[in-house]
Image (cartoon, rainbow, N blue to C red; front, side, top):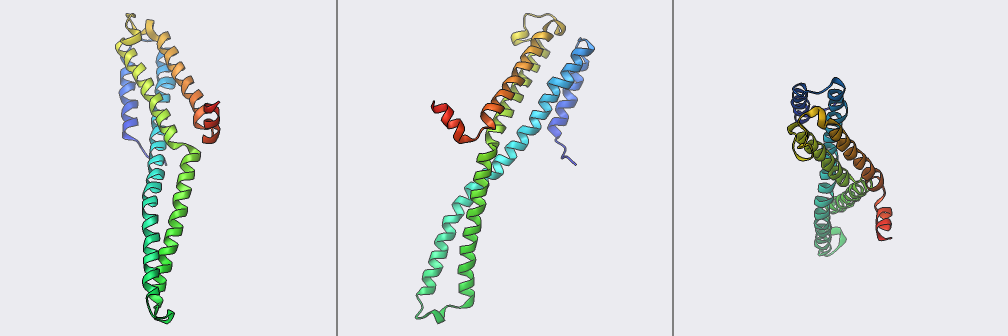
Length: 198
């Protein structure tokens, strides 16, 4: 079962109430609910999910990247201390176990860091998050300007008169989001870099 997001629920309720008070045709209210609000709720969810994954993967990479050198140093120091003895017979089983555990921990953590960094680079969660956040905020801005008949809707006296411009702006934002997602976000980083260089 999907985890409930109180902010998304608030948006749905708040905008739903706002729609009811606008003097619009039923078809226009339907557009507000099924296109504009639906995209806002969907992008809010996607932005939150991408942000969470980005933060988890980046934090794993950063923290692991800091811990690995410490483990390697600790492993080297423990090996040096064990080698100070007169003979290998002086090494205790527990000391060998600790040294090996530290070495294996460094190895396993280095693999976790590498997998985390590769996963983030492959899926571009940071870019996804920023793209969804930019698009959803643009949609909200257009919505509030439309509701208040401000910005590009200032010349219009009613919401019904301004509706076609609003719908056009919404579709333009959605189209731009899709184009950026398809051409920049889902493309591997190496291919993006080659295209930018040419």
